[in-house]
Length: 363
Ligand SMILES: *Cc1c(COP(=O)(O)O)cnc(C)c1O
Image 1 (cartoon, protein in one colour):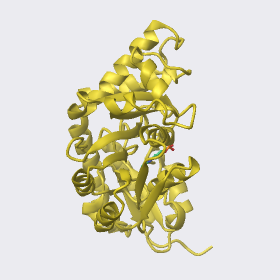
Image 2 (image 1 turned 135 degrees about the vertical axis):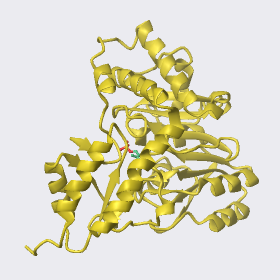
Image 3 (image 1 turned 90 degrees about the vertical axis):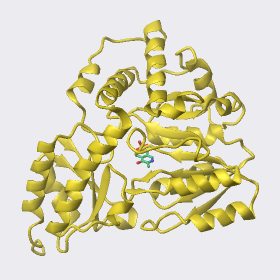
Image 4 (image 1 turned 120 degrees about the vertical axis):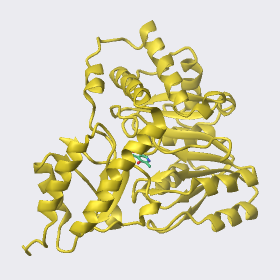
């Protein structure tokens, strides 16, 4: 089965083989070495981050990393402005609400870009806002949010930027200094091509050092993880096999040319889909220039039901992804993350050609 959903992804044979590593206890020195190696590799994904940022590894899905970042990096009394234009941005506001943290939300319709002017005005009106949180690639629609402009606004106001980069880390560019970026949350099983269950926060070391009394969660408190991981240890059992898989995925990533090469590879896949599927009636949900590299949302051609298209493609060996919420009925998404070959894309397009040709008969 080729997974075309935005994580978990199709594994390469290299990464799959890494799962067969000999059993290892997380209290043994080999585990500490593994953790230190993983952290160093993650810190090198973006060379700019290597000096001032450090990676904290967590066992959990991407949501755990995002929640740990918000709960640990932001002091309990600091105000955080959440900018949302999709499921994942809205989820960050929900997290802050659950933790009863002072926050404000600027949300816009899911098909809209982030409203830069409203954000700027909000920061002028409320100088108490110390952090802005946003999603880089809003997986709901595939939009690459304009973090260049948002980051410039944060920098101008001296506000710290936090990014949910779960579905973009290792593929899209990150500019740490230029954006006043202090932390990003990400996971092993999206653009890094590891297995689900390992996530991490890459955060500025000085903020981590000072976050000892911030979190009101025990498990999602980055501070003890940060402190113990300096020597490779972790306060709780980590996903040992997941760590081995991520290590191999990071080696494979570096061998293939790192972030610019990964972005390039995703764009090669996505631009074929963006060119071919509209000729079969599946129009792009957004303007092509608005998409990130790795995922595209399409409108179901008139007369097609999602379940029929999904099931047909599944029989052909591909798992696609539905739209979320109000987009569920007439949108589908295809991601190009994971070990996907050009031959896979050929077969996918052939299957789409058969399935999407002509409106289906009414039941
Ligand atoms: C996938 C994703 C997450 C986290 O999802 P999990 O299911 O917890 O791994 C968070 N944010 C974005 C933008 C995502 O795409």
